[in-house]
Image 1 (cartoon, one colour):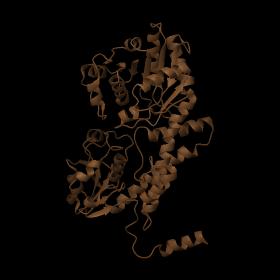
Image 2: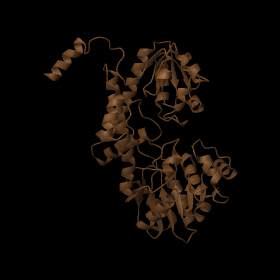
Image 3: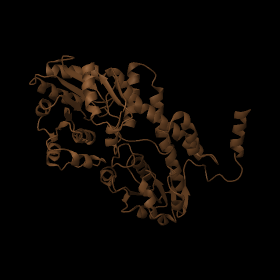
Image 4: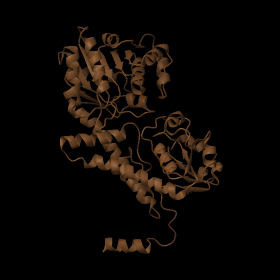
Length: 454
C-alpha cells in the first residue's frame, strides 16, 4: 500500500486517484479549484470516463479524499504525482507554468517535512524540461537536492480520453524517466499496484523519457497519415480497397492506428507533433518528418472537404453523425467534425449534426449556426448528404430507412450490408471511385501514365 498525492484532479488525475484507491492505496488529491475538491470529498464529482464509477464503488472508506491545501496533500503522502495542463504556447512549445506552480507548492510543503519524498510529473513536457526547469524549481522551493531526501521522475501517461482507466491499468508499457534508482523504484511500486497483469515497465533517464513520450505521438500520427494517404489514393481509383491494402501491410507494419479514414485530431496528437517539430527546429536538427505529418493531416482534411462539397450543392444541407474528435468522448479539441462544419458553413452549406455527448461543447463554439438533431434519424432525413464522423457501434441501431433519399458518406466503411441496403446512395470512401465508369484510365491520365511507364 502506497501513500500518494495527486496534484490536478482533471480527467486523468481523478481517474488515476480512483484506480489507485480502488487497489488499496491511500490517495490524497489536490486541485486549485475548490469546487473540484468539494466534489471529490462529497462524492459528487462527475466523470465521463468508463470504469470510474465502478472503481469508486470499490474504494474503502478513508482511502480517497481531496485536501484543502497542497501542504496537507504532501504531508500525507510519500509520492506526489503532478497531472496538470501543459498548454501550447505561441511558439508551439508547452507552457510549464502550471507544473512549476505545483512544484512551488510541493516544495514549500516539503520544508515542513523531514522524511524523503518523490515527485513524478505525468504531464507532457518538451525534452530537457525536467533537467532545465522542473528539477531546479523543486530544489529551490524545497531547499533539498534531488537524490538527497528528494526524488524525481518523469512518468508520462499513454492514455486516450474515454479509455483512461484502460490506459492506466492495461497499458502497453509504463515509461519512467528517473533521476535516480530510488525514485524510479518508488514510482514503479505505485504503478504495479494497479497494473492488470505483468506489463513492461521501461526505465531510463529523464531526457530519454521526455523524447520517448513525444516521439511516440509523432510515430502514431505518421501511421495515421500514411493510411490516410492510401485512403485518398484508393478513393480515386476504380477498384482499390484501402482496407485490403492496409490489412496486407499490417502483417509487417502492425494494425495500430493504421486505418485510412478521417484526419486525426484531439487535445494531444496535433499539438504534440507541432511541439516536437518546434523543439527539433530549436535544437537545429531536421524536423521534416513531424512538420510533414502535420501538413499531410491538414491536406487530408481539405481532400475530404472537397468530396463533401462535390456531393452537396450550395444551399443544401449536410448532416454530421458525431462531432467529437474520437468515439466515446465529448471532447471536440481539434475535431475534424467541428472543422468540417465551419468549412461547410463558410461555403454556403447548411449543417445539421447529431452527437448527444458533444452538443454542449459544440454550442460553445458554433452556437446556433448549425442545427442540432435530436436523433440520428432526424439528421440523415434532413440532409442531402450525411457523413459519418465517428464509427460508433450505435450506428447500427439507426433506422437507416430515414436515409432513403440521402447520400451517406462513410469514410470508416463501418456500416453493415443490412444498413446500407436501406440508404439512398451509400459511399464507402476509400473503396474505389463509384464515379469512374467505362474505360480507365482516361485518355488524359493514360498519356501521363505512359510517360511514367516508358
